[in-house]
Image 1 (cartoon, rainbow over the protein chains, first blue to last red):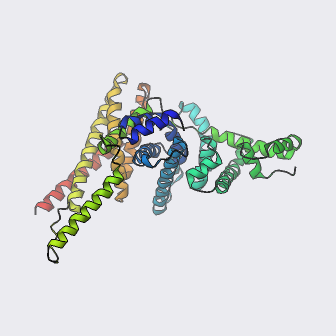
Image 2: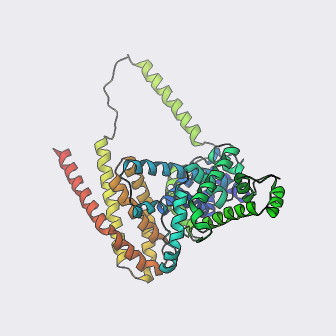
Image 3: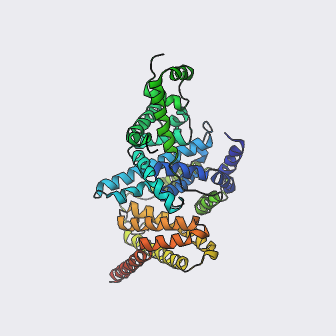
Length: 191
Length: 240
């Protein structure tokens, strides 16, 4: 664990809120990035960031330092993201099917994307990738995001998701296979 | 080496295979496997291009401002030698002792329920009042934004940040209470507030356009007036 993390954690556990502030400032962007990749939705990602740090603060005294603080945060963020995705899916099951226009809302284009021309050109490709990502199960997506984007090791992923290393490896494998199948028609030509 | 499986190639891509030297040697001499591996690389490189909304260096500070009130109110001046779990256990033990003492002193009988409780009706009324106030303040903030120029976006951003944290709590409450229409409105509002709180001055016209497209002010007014009507009805019902 990062030395300055452990100092900040000690201060926070001792009741010094400013100790925790250091951790929030250090890791907010990382957690946001992970949450957005997990949920595909900016507003839900903000929700995940806020809730992750509140939950982390509440259970900070139980953090034992065996994994790095960032891995521990990732675990909280991943679990909360999975809860949100499950709730969203349950709601979707209760509602009539969405048309294509609304289906894109759960994997929306970020508002800070470049100008309209470039956006139009790349949005087709991005939509294909987003659709491919949405076909992954929650656990496959978690394992894939943690490995591919956050570059966690298989052991760290298994720790974060509470599954064995071989199951984590298999989740990554299945995720990549699904992405390959979904993107196969476009990989050699357009991507 | 025999041809590596897809799983081995994927793990090789991530550097997670033990025999990477053997796979590298095999790929060097096997065009079919090399092509297979190239497709895996192309797919995964393409996924890298999926954009993530930018958050600037000040983002951590913004997150802190949103959560600090909850953290401070819970733990300010909390002594390190008295963790909340220990205090809760001690409190539970003290309650048990008091209850045991009182039971021992009084003859056993069923007492009338005199516990002071907030009834669900009052809770619901309080929530209505809070939510209506929040909607009204959001409406005012967005009207001010609609009328502001590019040079003075800072106050709008600060207002949006303040409203954002509240909005999340109301949205989560609406979700838990099974009020999808309120939740949807608060979700739309949250998107706008998030954008405002992170907006650069040159993005103001785009924001205003988005507000018009989503008809957010109109929706807020409708819900605001509905909430007020419900408050009036609830008050009238409770006074009869």
